[in-house]
Every structure is written in structure tokens, then in C-alpha cells.
Image 1 (tube, helix red, strand yellow):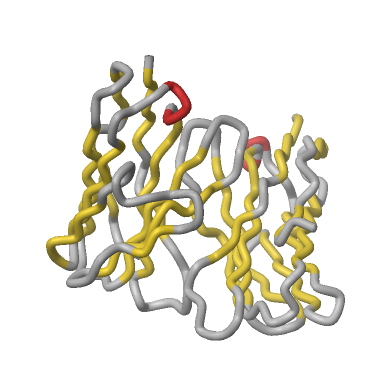
Image 2 (cartoon, chains in turn blue, brown):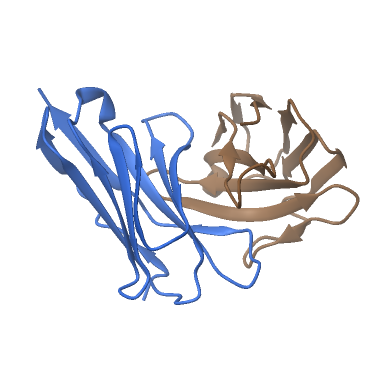
Length: 112
Length: 115
């Protein structure tokens, strides 16, 4: 079982819709969770971090964490074509580890 | 967040040669990391570079192939030695700037092609 799993997609949504991106992880002691956006040919850009169960909202983005079920998700409201990118989920193990494990990413396509 | 630059942004190299990639940060950071991202793949950590100590390499990566220097708190280099076409990849440095728990910020990357 991979440590951090994401559906590679592509996930295609119409402009204005809600895009839902999901990530599961295998290590129950994981403590820190991140979503990165990576445009083609560019480096990853941190868009959300979440550390506690529940929802965390930042503008059009909402991260959701459920440690009991070991999943973290990212919702993008009012999706725009400029949101088209690959979204990487990253998870830090517990025990003071500062090194994240990255998933392979989900490709999101927002079509006009 | 910290502003990170990398040089070169891209290079095409011959088999058997070496390339040194530089990473410069606009503020002092304790933790610097080097990643590799092969086409269509996710990020693979090569090593962690802390100032004043030897780099810590991940499984599958060795110092002879990927020597790293970290002479101060704002700069690091990664050398890809004795290159082969399998080393063609994007190499990224990242930092944890200490202001946000465990958050990493990436440089723009170096796209390496080995012929």
C-alpha cells in the first residue's frame, strides 16, 4: 500500500462547479497535511495546510481532514480555468518528522 | 514565505559529466531539501541539507552520486555526478522557513536533460 494515494485523474469539471480532490494516507500517526498546486512546467506551490480534524477554509479553497478515516480532501468552489493544474497531497509523519511524503497528484481540468 | 532561486533553470548535458545546481534563499533557513521529479511522477526526496552537518540521504540516493554542500543558512548546492540519461529530471530545492509548522516552499526547479 502506497503511503499517500491520490486518484491521478484527470478530474474534469465545468467552470463554476465545485472540484473535489481526495487523498488517503496509510500512517495513522501522521500529523501535518498539505495541498500543493503544480502548473505544468512549474514547481509546486503550497495552497493549504491542515493539522486538526475538520474543515479549514481559505478563499475558494477548503481542506477537510478526517484522521479516523485517514483521508484529507480539497474542495475548490467556483472553479476557474486557471485552477487547471495538478494537485499534490503531502503528509508528514508524526514523531517530529519534518519530511512530507507526496502523493502522485490529481490532474484537474476546469473547462469553460 | 521565503523567496527561492535556482541556477541553472535548465541544462542539457552529456553522459558522464557532472552538473552543480545552486539554490539561494532570501532569508536564513535551517532546513533545506533537494527533490527530484521525473516526468509524470511525484516528488522524490533526495536528501536533507542542514548547515554545519552532513546531508542526510534517502534510500536509493548516495553521496558519491549526489554530493551536497550547505555552506551557510541561505545557500546550498546539489551536484549530479557521472550523469546518465536516467538522471534526466527536474531537480527542486525547498526550504522550511520556520514560520509555519512543517510547511515547505519550493524553488523554480532545474530541468536537466542528459544525452
